[in-house]
Length: 248
Image (cartoon, rainbow, N blue to C red):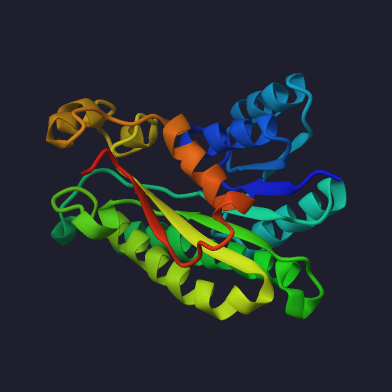
């Protein structure tokens, strides 16, 4: 039976690239999405066209019931979970902290922090050898924003990714003896449509000259790091925050 990977936020950007690459490498892939049914279906179709197994499951990762349903559906249709890619995340429009609303903060942290915790909770319950599981890997998709802080644009997003980094380190130590590796990838300026969500579709082009490599990255470049962290090639790597940022 093939290994099973759940990719949250798998219908676009880094998540979609990761799901497609995982399918190519033999994983059965559960593609989670929030609302874009056609985009998720296109990812599943691409995986199946290449001879792989995949399914799409709708769910808002800020909803505990949706998270539980995602994992239970994957269990039932694909089999025991091997890898969780904790990728779902949001940004809001670029803004200074003094202009944030409570609603903005609550939504940001509900998806990017609480949702991430709910997903790792469900993954550990399935993977931990202490609970009868066979072990596995968790890869959290963080951001170099956690280190840079996102001033004048996304301090709340950066803070949410800083929380994800802390969770990665703490959880990795908590479950290391139970067969579970927990790592994070920290992408930099990547060409995805998340920048349009923040009100500036051309943000990567505006900032790329400040990147030592003088360019933005692709979702596929991040996906390759994620697949390495998920694989046995990274068998002695846990608690690591791996930057994929062109040196930024």
